[in-house]
Length: 342
Ligand code: AFP
Image (cartoon, rainbow, N blue to C red):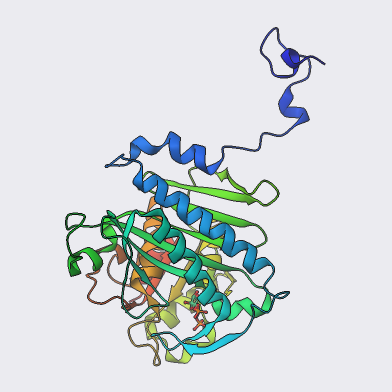
């Protein structure tokens, strides 16, 4: 068959090329380039920053995939500020992302779960990033899905001047982009720049992310609830009432203990993830700056909702880097129902 026939350039072909070779979709690089003019400050730096994150995630993905083979499982023997045992892969992922962002030069300050204070990168950089380099680390050693979560802000002070608290402690509603990487049965990068949510699946033999989930929408309702029910005795009465509400309707309980994985499933299928205040964590367990804000932005952009059980997550004032919050995120109607019992 001639090239002309198979690619439909001339007369109508009898066999379409798409039936012989499935289209593999738009590569992430091309997608970012094609959509660059959507950004308020379209100078190309935010595009480059997204590429840096994608590149670092590919390196982390490689390491996650061979963790069992090269002694990357297990704890380092230290704890991060939140008191969690640091795993080798936590530390490694933090190094990979920090290095990639430092090299890129677009970021002036990095806030990470793994660092007590923010890290100065390039003072000329126009962006601030908050990142959980490897979330769900208790799942590393047992080959269960884990993720990376990131939020990107534009700095408020002029580039080249000393970084101010107002550059660092920005509200979720100030995010210019946010997303996550899910290291699961396949690896996906999902992000938003405030113009909907797009998901890209990693093709390891080509070493590239391809658009697989354009303009993701979260179902308005769902039948999946994700909560650590083992802690139920210390949940407030309204949270217990909502769990009972789910049970009365025979909803499905699904809880991985990796926020990214639970969130991603609920976004695709319709569901709610709740991590409420508990006796052990009276302000909630999850971190506002590098876990909740990013997913709240993605959720809202996909038509979902994210609150602390009362207030919108993106409106919460940030007072400290490692601030915790209760987190209700998922299908709009489910979050509303859970809140209505409060
Ligand atoms: P780690 O990264 O320390 O494992 O924390 C994971 C996490 O922040 C989030 O991804 C999970 O949904 C949640 O904590 C699990 O917490 P519980 O183990 O208390 O249910």
